[in-house]
View 1 (spheres, helix red, strand yellow):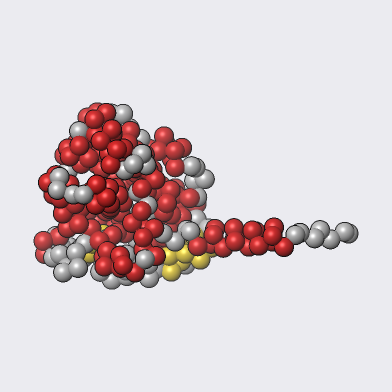
View 2 (view 1 turned 180 degrees about the vertical axis):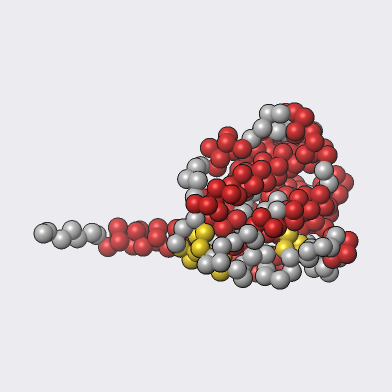
Length: 263
């Protein structure tokens, strides 16, 4: 049998591609999930809000900028923002009882960004950055494990197998279940989006702490794990509807905030 000799440049490209596949899955809500939130939000913006935001973002879409807060984590300048991606509310407690840590959390940061954007006292660059942060963090708070119980770093310490590959509970909800559907973010947005005006209006009436309590409300379901911690078809079947719901709620609510500010 004749051996096929690949040029060195091709081998290097294949090696890089394999490394990229292995390293991009461990991100917050996953790149696909955040883009779904951004695209759903864009579809629910008023014409005025969409035009104003497009101008501020220099033509970039909410779907693309929604991953910016994960992108900048490679720069230590932004290390202080790491706690802004999540909050901790132990079982049986309210957010007010748990308290806001001094470094901030996702609830406090969303509220601050809303207030700052409404004040309209930004430079253009800072306003664009604030929109990018808001687009990301509204997505994060809807991921159930970004509202942690204080015991296992939002499920990161729960090591398990997902379809026979090593993972952890946080990553299963961030990206494994989403990527496992093998849909582009546009296809996923088509799948989850809603045109029901009553539903949209109801979701947009909820406040930020309500979003966190909804994530807490899924906690028992999220942690309903088999003894061998090996997840596959059954866990996906039992939970994919919750993933879809949280993504579309995040997008609709992000649009509600931006319409209030720019529409």
